[in-house]
Image: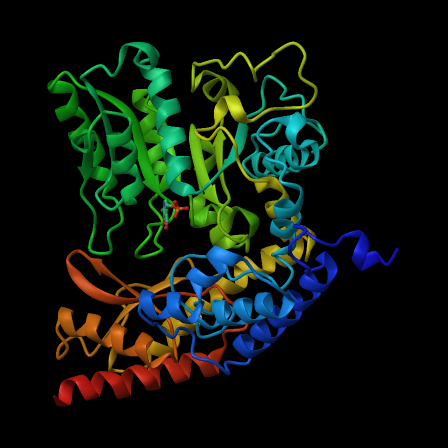
Length: 493
Ligand SMILES: Cc1ncc(COP(=O)(O)O)c(C=O)c1O
């Protein structure tokens, strides 16, 4: 029997062979990548959803399926035309990893074997890779006390962790653990009325969401003032804390940004940790974007004190080049992970008989993807040292862009970047907030670049996140020129 026939036919009525389809899709993807990397295509060409649905012939394929390879190829090529090309070095948009060329392979393997890794017996390889990568992450925080990353026995002094589908779920998981620590009865009885969470006014919105989902209500978040660049004013911590106490409320957690989503600036973690220690408060570091500084000897000082946290979240699909989604939730004291969801499903949790490790008892999700496999793969494609270089280079790219824009009188950058996120304005004395936003839309409409925008203390900024190692000085120059030309057009109207 021919090999392609051996694997053939996912349905008797269809005649698409496994190998032919994979090869055809691989070729189309390669062309797509090349065109994107060579800057030969618009980064994003937006069309209305009705047009996309029509052009992809959704109804036809939904009803009758792909009849042959050529229909499948046509669909994939067409699908790619309507994607945002993150691999184009002029993509400088949201904090979503620009994947390495071979990053998609674990998703392909997972999509073929479908081994959710939350139960060891449903995916022993995936669960092992997750545990290995968690050990590695713990070791970066000095929370791994074993001598070998193959030690999966969770020694008593170890921290612990798990992978979950994204930073928002991860923040919810960590805050739920903080609640279990201060009010264990909440799991069965519901929330006591006196719990609040403190943090800079600029925490990611997933913190407020988590509090609402947990039934504390988003007003349970007590914001601490921030400076002109939205970094927490630690001198306010004590006063706010005393005021909370005087209202007979209890602080369930103090949250820090490492780094803040809009600005990419880090809160002073060490100082916040000292405050939490003084009052015996749970310290949660939202390191979704910036925990990655731990990899680099030179950038690590930005997260100085992070290891004093009780819980940390770290998105691998932001700065570790993992395709969405993959986030770690890490606990300094493993007991907090074990106590988080005080619930049992008799069909899954058999404490005495389990070989290996199940993450299911500790995750919001019941079934989850092979997240550890994606994370491990990202390193396996280049090795840890090259990953560190990638991180350092991304941070340097932001400093380079800062220097370039700062050398022109037309651009205003409010602060030197601390990560790979940089905010700036074009001619702030002439272009209003609304026009800064209009400028961003004009830019992305032109397809030449994809950037985002944000507000810092109510003022509108353009925002770049440098995620692609191929983005270079010429791209920065072209960005400045294009913005200048489009900005001046707006001004001339
Ligand atoms: C600081 C911070 N925390 C949490 C999140 C939420 O992460 P996710 O998009 O993976 O849910 C983000 C996303 O940008 C973030 O920047």
